[in-house]
Length: 242
Image 1: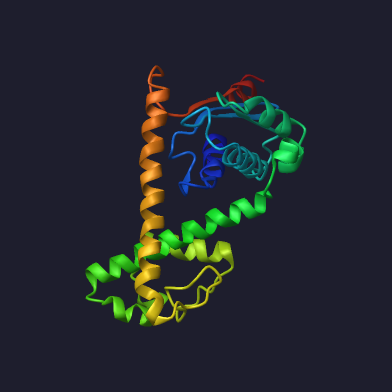
Image 2: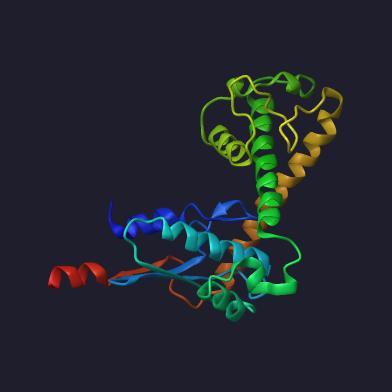
């Protein structure tokens, strides 16, 4: 794998916490510059007023992911065109952490914020699997409490659900119930209809926000040729010339 591919692969593990999609797929990675000293990445968002918490979390996660690339050297991740760009970029440069960057403005810890959206992503993934079974297997809502992970067909829906359960430390054994609460406790049969409607609303909200943000990003940067990530790698050129 080329170094450029390794860097992109690392960045593809970074999710927008609210949209539950990789920042590489969303067009948020504006540019990647690799040289003999390391890598510099510029990140952009759909608006200048996107949540500073989310912005910090994505930039911080991108830096951590890049630091795991072998022999990458120095890592710099910059946030462009945001009303808190200066503050967040300064915090990144100083390795100040979330509270060190925002001070008294950091009402919640980064871990608490991350957990909230990991749970939402799990709820949406769970609902997608259940809805798929309701549509394609003849399963009735009254039978959902019987549904186990081993009953789900393989594919992206199941893979996404298992990945999110593993992230939260929830049971991924084949005989585990599919419909569980945020702590992994099976939802009682009588509560399933109401809880399923709630899960559906979470999934629709995430998907709707994703569509909305893609449109905002395309509109904001419509003067640019396209939203593809610009990648330059002078490290290879320098090495081949030496």
